[in-house]
Amino acid sequence: MYTASAAMLEALQEAGVSFIFANFGSDHPALIEAIAEARALKRPIPAVVTCPNEFVAMSCAHGYAQLTGRAQAVVVHVDCGTQSLGGAVHNAAKARVPIFVFAGLTPFTQEGEARGSRNEFIHWIQDVNDQRGIVRQYMKYDNELRTARNVKQIVHRSLQLAHSDPKGPVYLVGAREVMEAESERVAIDVADWPPIAPTPLAEAAVAGLVDVIQKAARPLIVTSYLGRNPVAVTKLMRLCSRLGVGVLESVPSVVNFPHNDPLYQGNHWSHPFQNRALAEADFILVIDSDVPWIPTVSKPSEKAEIAIIDVDPLKQSTPLWYIKARRCYRADAATALAQLNAALDRIAIDEEAVARRRRHYAERHRERKAQLDRLEQASRGDIITPEYLTACVRHQVGLDAVVINEGVTSNHVICDHMARERPGTMFGIGHGSLGWSGGAAIGMKLAAPEKAIVAMSGDGCYMFSQPSTVHWMARRYRTPFLQIIFNNRGWKAPRFSALAVHPEGFASRASDLDLSFDPPPDYSGVAAAAGGAFARVIKRPDDVEAGVAEGLRVVLEERRSAVLDVWLEHL
Ligand SMILES: Cc1ncc(C[n+]2csc(CCOP(=O)(O)OP(=O)(O)O)c2C)c(N)n1
Ligand SMILES: [Mg+2]
Image (cartoon, rainbow, N blue to C red; front, side, top):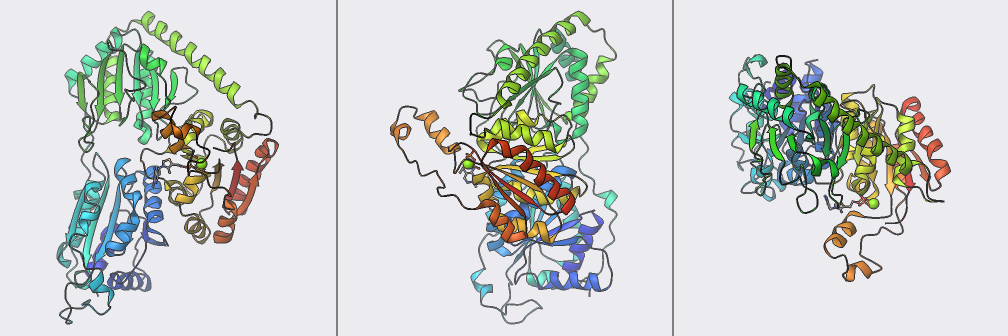
């Protein structure tokens, strides 16, 4: 039997999708049947990963795509499963992550007019006016499969759009009768469905940018996620080294530049003070950043000239957004940087000016490094500081481990003290809905089984991540990872937000802001119960280094997850 569901599986398989993260329901008999048939007949289809929670399913696909750049499939149940995707949809959209999402639609016939017609009470309850509307503002593309005859074309078109810049999730729905319908097989050549080719800079823009960088005394590049494409990092290093340009990361969600390069000038988040490198720059090139600075607290000098290169330089889907860039270019970062580097080979470079800029930035880099070394030295008495904890993790995990950073008020600490040097070895939140780290760890481990995956998250994020689902999956699908919980007994960030606006208000004097988790759950015990994870609570500084080493050993040698619940100062 060759149904629309079989065609969808075939299209996903030929597009190179490896996994379907699935949460099934009464809308999926045809799909379940098609999967069983393919397996029985030894027809290759993507591997199905059972996800007891949809947010986790979407986060798995998110993590997989972050490491590989390739969309995976998420299958959910009608409107209900679509709503349960929850904030993970926002995350994929905001982080521009390609994901293919399919949800069934309740049957549209009720008297047996077609196979799949209504036969359960729930089919009336789940009949809603606009299921696609639930997620439309986050999806790059949404459509309904209306006939079995063009399912493959629509799946390939969806993936083509998901993988084209600016990338993002796509959403298809199909009613039960349509997904059951039979049709002729359509032959597709995937080579006919490529993503849009990367956009280059116009030649005049290349010449103009090279000129303005050369004339600047303190040229600075600000980026947040140029390193989503590791090739762009190498090209950025070449450009910066050749011209003596500093690099400042703003809210980095990936490794954009090696932290040990003397031109690296640190990373700025919601720190409530002016960033020095930003203030001193006389030319700033923003490449791939949604929030290059926060004008109420930290911004460039009025005299600085600003340029931006981005695949979406005006951030069309963000209603309030502007940065006063006089040069504004829609281009792919790696392509644009390659063009700039090529232009440098054709012109005379003022080597003295380059040496001056390099000296300045190298000096600032040394100051910063010395400051970080001081911060991570020891704990304060019996207190484990986030800096000390992160340094212990860094000592143990090595340069190739993939670090997932969902540390919230410790985001910048994790970024600073993990001090990653290689592209693709750290991913942070470039999105706003917490809990991504758990599912992302599983997705990344599926994408790179040979790599050590280390998730570092706040205690609040750990709870948001659905740890019972995550750790059940980690055992079931053999995707062990090391989880380190920055346990400050609650949500510190909302306190920070409240006091930043009301520094002297009642909240500043109140003893309870409804943000604490006292008494906290047994976080690592949850993972042990759900998936047999190695569980340890660490409360003393002297136990951190050995605890991390043991956790990592368990993950790598015993191939089971380890959850370290590390107690920091109370929020
Ligand atoms: C889904 C979701 N709910 C709520 C928030 C608001 N929020 C932002 S940070 C935060 C606290 C996070 O707690 P934790 O992980 O413990 O980090 P900490 O603030 O303690 O560093 C909350 C609730 C959010 N961003 N996303
Ligand atoms: Mg916390």
